[in-house]
Length: 433
Image 1 (cartoon, rainbow, N blue to C red):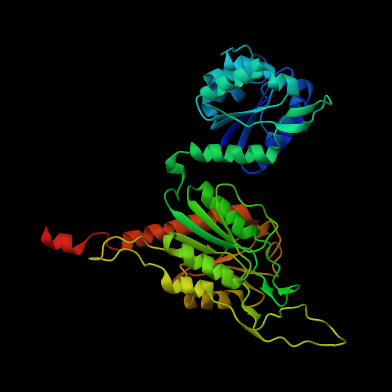
Image 2 (image 1 turned 60 degrees about the vertical axis):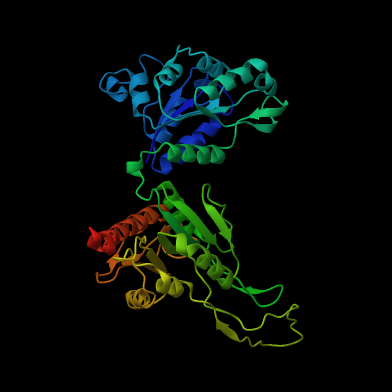
């Protein structure tokens, strides 16, 4: 998780900074807030202290114990060294002008001058102030100095003027900040850097007629969490998703599908390029043998018979086609790692172990729909991990994001072990030497 330094300046949009501080802290980031004197007129420092559990910087001197500012007690230097990302949101016209001209006359601008990492400005001001040539010139200087500028939105402003100047919404700023962190991340902290990860998520829908379909209760939350986490761990990610209400994750190649056959086609098209494949989708096992071309009418019937046929077994196909790794004398071939999911309502370990072997998975993540905190539409999960030759490993309840990180970390280790176990040399070359 990152160290994020959040600057808050004098603007009614300061309330949005509370959302940023809260969201980043809940996501596990360590957040420190620096407020200008004008910013503290809109939101109190106590609010940010409560949201981040860190002291809030408000002045160059006398804002807290020296221990909070680091060993030297010089907080603007210590904070600048500490931070992985600097975000000023909202950024007023005044502070933008001082930053553009290298003025360091308060805690925030002094920290800015000492900071050398990725940085982002989120302007917020009256539309005429924003359009003023001086402000635009200052923003251009900031761009040239390496600042990422998150352009403000247009709309009705607090002063009742209408135009561009309203600070962008926190969700957009958070997405841009995450991208900036990934761009500047230390490769040593990205265990999946250089790898390609394929993820399936969500339900499938099997049409009965133009109106009705068969489906299940999957929301896609687990698969989307895996895709986002793999992206944050440095992988190039393709997410094959059935119909969900979730937004497409930023920085992920999204493939939307509807039926199990659609998902099968998408997986087979992308599987060859994947180093790690995680099948988290809840794929329908059956579909109607015949889809009625028109809506099925009741016409006084009290029952309806449907004949169902099997859908393609995507996990079994992947298990039968994955590469084991490089083979002596045949050149290099990157090993593929396959992870499946199993949702059960009884005999969890027995059914999951059978699926692990039959589908030739490297790991299977099994959960019981009846366990509290597990199942569909929850933000948590309770799973048991199964790998060939090892005892089942039950895990405690945890957030789906945390579980995604644990699963991907284990899969990275499995892949590394495959590389270590398989010969990586060309036998013909060795004989000739």
